Length: 485
Image 1 (cartoon, rainbow, N blue to C red):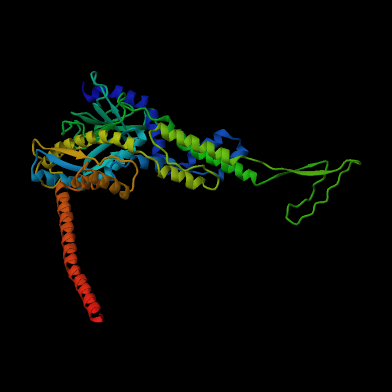
Image 2: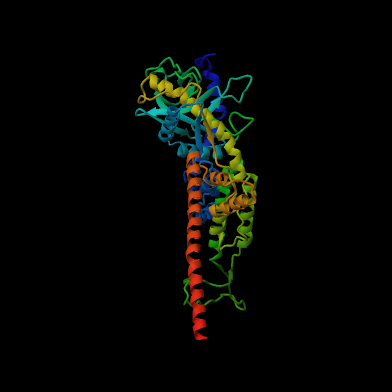
């Protein structure tokens, strides 16, 4: 079945997953820093208009989403090491060139952020100004689709949003149609939401032939059951709820600062609220004593903070994240306490799981790059360079995802292993400096050994010089003693 024959099921698939794109759009919006409007909307739905008016000025848009995703997305912080297997020196040089052109670690770190936020990521190599580049498609702008009856998790199509267009309709009015780019291994096309193929927008390839013979994207999917992963409903909800709960507490504290004054059978005309004011109260009814009092609002802020901390900690644990220990959260340490909890989160187990996905993703990326590189050279889209060897492959090694430790802690543990004979100095250096090449490690080991040898030699020379001086001093003292005698 050709791509043009599949337009209707593709459009049905898009509409079926419209909510997925919409929720990803909200997550991306908040991740980019725009949390406050969603907190305002939540408060407006929950409380009375008058209370919302009071609460609006006390909204605390504390964006934990950014911090949590950042803490989870650390596998590219220590640069992975990439090697060409079954290749030549030319292949190694070409790999190094592509790493720089792609800005590979920074770009893949962005992919890792989307992977943790949306449970999937789409990576696209492309050419711009005769240079190969790499980009991550935001999760609210693409959908995978499959017509594979044997393996429905195999994405046979990739759908990428392509904006919208206002066109005239048959009634003389106008309508807005959505545009999509759809790719398969053999074809590509731009279609609109009416079901038309827009050959007028397909440039010099109106037939939609895919020159690569493969889908020109790498799709990283965290789900082992769904092609389009179900988003974690707690991520968006808890991000907004935490800010709402803190805003609720701010509103309560605001009201706590203002007592309500009430009167019983007393005239209050012309009374001025001032520190030095004197109010003269009277009643028109004989025998009735006028009364003035206050209602002091009260809120147990410590219990409220305990609830916020408990919910936040439980949520982090459900995501495989061990929150840092901060003790008891109080009104005085609320901001620093939550911040410390996030800073000290242990995500090592979750990050180690992510590595398995990205080892495969990198293998797919470099296999795709090898194919696209050949086509780019043939069509002269990039400067002339050698091709990758036919049997060459690229393997990527990630650093071990250790629990949060200082470098000093790691050195101390490795030193203990070396002293116990459980490992070698070379292996320890490799673990401490995972981005070093084997040659750099050999040079460092040799340098360390040379320095130790030099230190021992200097010590021996020092001992040899010092000993005669001591003997001479002892001899002089002996001679003096004999003369005195």
